[in-house]
Image 1 (cartoon, rainbow, N blue to C red):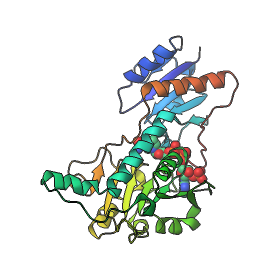
Image 2 (cartoon, rainbow, N blue to C red):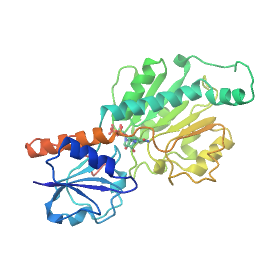
Image 3 (tube, protein in one colour):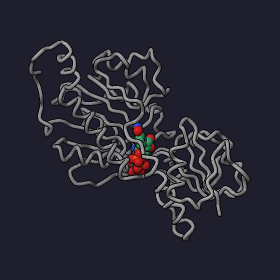
Image 4 (cartoon, protein in one colour):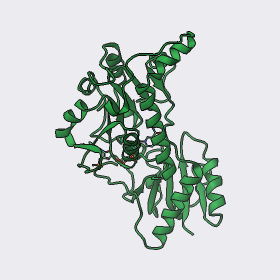
Length: 316
Ligand SMILES: NC(=O)c1ccc[n+]([C@@H]2O[C@H](COP(=O)([O-])OP(=O)(O)OC[C@H]3O[C@@H](n4cnc5c(N)ncnc54)[C@H](OP(=O)(O)O)[C@@H]3O)[C@@H](O)[C@H]2O)c1
């Protein structure tokens, strides 16, 4: 039988291995680097940060499965074989990201950081200027699987929601902006900017000072906020710090960073206006990932098209 290889770097692969074994004990499962066996046996690879050149060494490879929704971890491999790359789209992952986005929007909207400080100081005081959600504008960069669901959840809470994507999206209740031409108007309609873009050559360092200065600061929240749960390569840390210093940003929630893990001496850790999380806004469970990969392999072997295949020219 065609072998499935787990090529997982930076994580203990054993939890994924256990899930694949329990769901498909008959499947010939190999693990890099310990148990590759005969390279020509390997037809499928489930990869995360695999070393460049590794996937090219399997001549029978028919599909690559990314361990995450993003596939930027594969982009640095110039020898990547020309086979379909499938990314993770999973309902549980989508719900988790929606939870993260709603939580962070509400943290800023409801001034929770300031109440945290007041609690530490045992201060019982209502902070003025709590606008209604219906008066607050939230902009979501990236209206894909994750961005769209988060946008809808925020809309249900009453926020005024806009989205920015490459192509226009006619969606009920969500203002759609697209492309370079729509970016400035989108930013001007965003007090809280949520970034759920993929990391591609077009989106590198997009969250820079110039862009942040175009956010709406005179809205109901009386300040602008950034929430980045896309990828660290999208943001310029020094620019975000400068934006916090000069009042361009009133606060931020950062789940991802250009260099991870975030360095212990990063000023983000101690900034009371910033919420730092360790790139865990939404992770797919090993069991859901194994089910998703086996379902796609089943489709391929039944002659059906793979789902959620990455468009290599777009990079996502
Ligand atoms: N922090 C975490 O824990 C975590 C977890 C999962 C995923 N993520 C990140 O979230 C990203 C988004 O996931 P997804 O499943 O929602 O991806 P997706 O379905 O592929 O959606 C990507 C969205 O970004 C838009 N886009 C891409 N390039 C653009 C550009 N140059 N200009 C304007 N819009 C652009 C796309 O526009 P079109 O709709 O017009 O194509 C689409 O709306 C992933 O790539 C990953 O980096 C992070």
